[in-house]
Image 1 (spheres, helix red, strand yellow):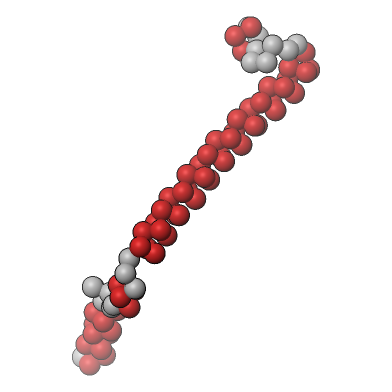
Image 2 (image 1 turned 60 degrees about the vertical axis):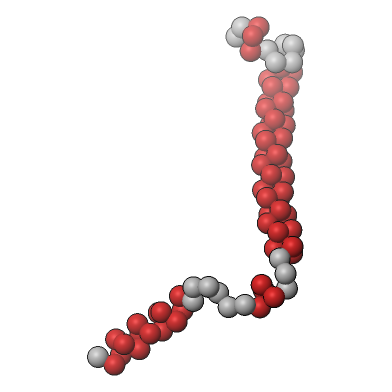
Length: 79
């Protein structure tokens, strides 16, 4: 291997263990960054939901798709 691949400047078996550990910690850092990003996105959406007035939580849905499905079922049974 060339010296450009030697991340930690070690030799032999110590280098292998060091490289593996370094790469595993790097992957764990990426996973932590992704997890924190997802958590931040969810917390922003929850904050926006709490910022809405209380009346908006009690109103019915603007498009009530369940009524459409119930009407279609009733029409097919009537035929």
